[in-house]
Image (cartoon, rainbow, N blue to C red; front, top):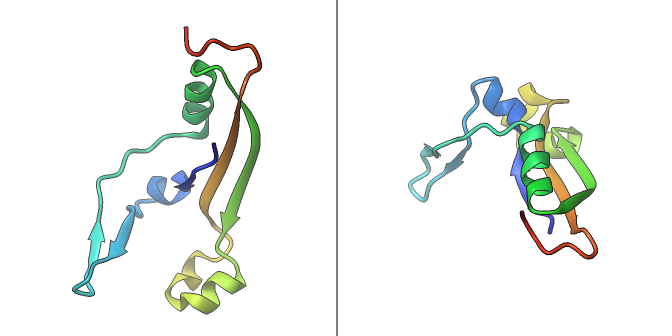
Length: 93
């Protein structure tokens, strides 16, 4: 399993998860901050092992596609965790 999440760096700096709605207006959505240790703890409770972790920072390619993000250059924007079920595990205790 390897979903991608909004990086907590932005939320901890007051930038909520948001998108532009069909009317062209910014729409913030309810945000819950989970630190990386929260993700690891939750995965381990499900008898999973963290296999890979990747973080994406706002880079030149990102800014080229979304110039308004230039002020965030170099900051982490998203992350992905790849989990594996531990062999022989019967699931959470």
